[in-house]
Image (cartoon, rainbow, N blue to C red; front, side, top):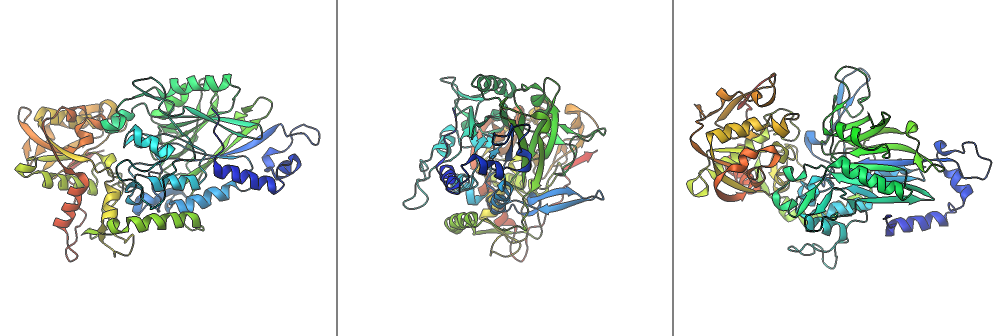
Length: 601
């Protein structure tokens, strides 16, 4: 199942040949220092070749540089202080990748999933066609699927791969049909329930001048828990380790001995700085999270792991089952970093010399030249989006942090929950008494600085969409007080025990979160109150939340038990209505106090 060389790559190959690079002598001359002849007479191919693996993950359709704190990466300085560096945007990512490839005749570019989904308006409005087009232009060779590739279901994912205009909205540009991805999307652990067969290709083989590297792509087994039910309808998600091991054996039998796993699941390094030495031996150093056990279980046949999902930056080694160290990398998110890994390929064994694998993350800085083809692409789609994107929705007096806030209770989370409560409190709209918002659904900050010509402090439709890009329909349901308390305790127990998911709550709901305790006890039961009154376990409450949470998503099984469901407007519509009702140019909305959850650390 080798990857067919794509059109643009074929052209590049023809140009290379025309330049006289096709001769072995010229190839050896053009090789980086690491690929020199090791113990052969003159004129033979060198025994080893250095293959450059460039990788990134979790782009989420961020074609333009991400705004506010979400667009920064942390860098530890020599004196130990930490500096925030503005990064990302495909104009700069393209330049970074193209610069990195120079002088590396063997270079392959791979991604770890979530290239699309939860995207800003510029991409999301057009069902992420602009992002696929940009990735084609970046010369991406292969990516794994992530959970967000399933946001709009399997048929839409197939369209992104194969092309064709949107089934409902048609073609966005006159006389232009969407071509689809030039690169394969890999989904080895996703099968169709009806046939048991893989939904997309499980693996692909990259080839150049006799060098062969297999790529196996998987998403996290828990994808159905974090995607709406419609998105994963008719699909089964399998164990990451078992799946990768199965296909690694298959590749090995086919003579492909060099294998890279692309895994949309990740971990948390001890430091958020991209240049942290993940292999430092100190107590509490290193990496934790689901990827550690996955890495320890994956067959030694796999030579390196490109990961994602947690939006963290790390370059770590985790021992494989035979005890040998193996590289595990992740490049933050939104195109802010890329990882450059050197894989030394031994032509005799056809395998990677694991002891010489080197890897580092690099910042996609915004002080380099922009790639003009990406600027043209952004301008083209921005023109189409402008009539919708630039409409003002409200005014703010300062940044209201959501995605960029690391606190359990986020200022923007409070605004969103209040907007949902206000929109759904009227009796004919559901009679909501309290609203819950999942923290992962807040995709950006509301940034005071103007993103275009609208002026500072103006919130445009495009900016509001970037915060809430899923346009989830809102639900109002009956839950007992006992179910409410259980739901709040599920934030810090069960599947959320290791990394808590703290719901954002509407005004009037208060409780204490004691992080010195463990498991469900971290939510102090006696402190949970609504408008100053203790929650009555026997009473029924009307609770507002998006359809994802109402389906029990993110490990909140108790929220999925609601009765008497009323479906309301979308989360984005309620958010925009709230901004319009609570702000004017003269009296902008200020960041709210975060005093609903009392945190003990």
